[in-house]
Each structure stands twice: as structure tokens, then as C-alpha cells.
Amino acid sequence: MKSFRIAFMAVVASVVMLSLTGCNPNAAGTAAAAADTDSCATGLRIAYVNIDTLLTSYDFWMSLNEDMINKRENITAQLNKEAAALQKEMEQFQSKVDNNAFVSRERAESEYNRIMKKQQDLQAKQERLTNEFAAESAKNDQIIRDSINSFLKVYNADHRYTLILSRIGDNILYADEAMNITQEVVDGLNARYAK
Image 1 (tube, rainbow, N blue to C red):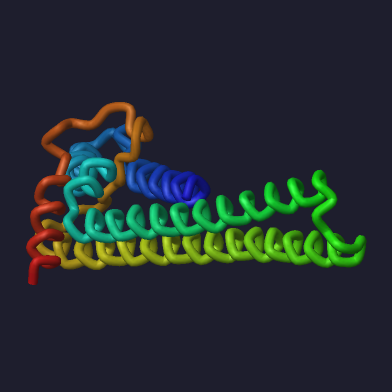
Image 2: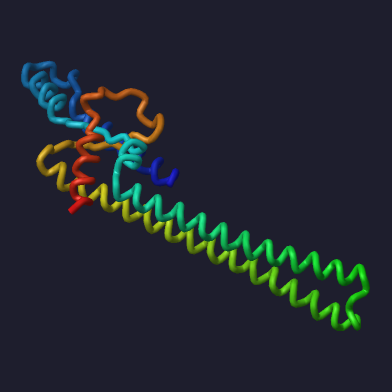
């Protein structure tokens, strides 16, 4: 996600620089050049969306996020329960070893191997569930990103912004609040999600 943000910001900076290089007031010094500068200054329409606010206000994201929190809690509870049962078996095994409760060495080794196999299976299950959870989380992130981008295309057909930036944390050091379209986007996304 961080590399996506860096690449996105690099593209944004390039677009802004390219759009501003066409607006050089030192070129030709005539009234035509001054008029060209004025049209460039007014032709570039920029807005931004505060992503943190958007996500915490977007009903669809909140629903997906709640589902993922519940899923993570269920996975953790399930793994903790199985780990506690395995720990109890290991303690019982150790107690039997300490009290010479096994009839033969082979029986003790067989029980030890069974417990070790259970531990390996539990570790494999934990890894599998962690990977599945991460894949589902990434899929949900992509769904949210696609939903926002799809909405912004429709939204921008009427508003005609040249550039819509995402404000994540402190990536934008200063922005006029008049350029903030976050609430409009949240309202539009939630209205579309409610349908």
C-alpha cells in the first residue's frame, strides 16, 4: 500500500508540474502570454479527499471492516482453543513420562510423535488461516479502491476536476478546505451503497 501511495504521489507531482510548465509568465511578455497564464491558472481544477475520513464514514467499508474483525476474532479464538488443548495434552504426556506411566519406550515415542504431529498440523493451520485472511483483506481493499474510483469517475463527469488527490495522513502539507470534497464523496458512496 505504501509503494502504491508513493507511486501515486509521483504521478500526481508529474501531472501538476506538466500542467504548470505550460503556464510560464516569462514567455514572450505580451498580453497574449498574460491571457494564456490566466487561463492556465483557472483551467487547473484540483480537489482532494481525506481517505481516513472517507473510510471511517463509508458504510460499505465499515461493513467489510466489521466482518473482517469478526473473522479475525473467530480465527484467533479457534486457534487459541486448539493450542490450549494441545498444551494440555503435552502437559499430560510430560506427567506420564515423569511418573513412568508408559508401558514401553515405543508407546511413549508413539505418543510423543502423535503430539508433535498435532503441533505441526496446528502451525500449518495457523499459517493457512493467516494467509487466507491476508488474501481476503487484500481483496476487500481492492474492492473498496475500485468502488471509490468508479464513483469518482461518475462524480467527476459533472464536476470536471483536473485532479482529485487523496489526502492520507500528512501527504498534503496544506490544502484550502474549499478543495475538500470528502463529504460529498462519502454521501454519494453511501447513497450508492444503500441502493
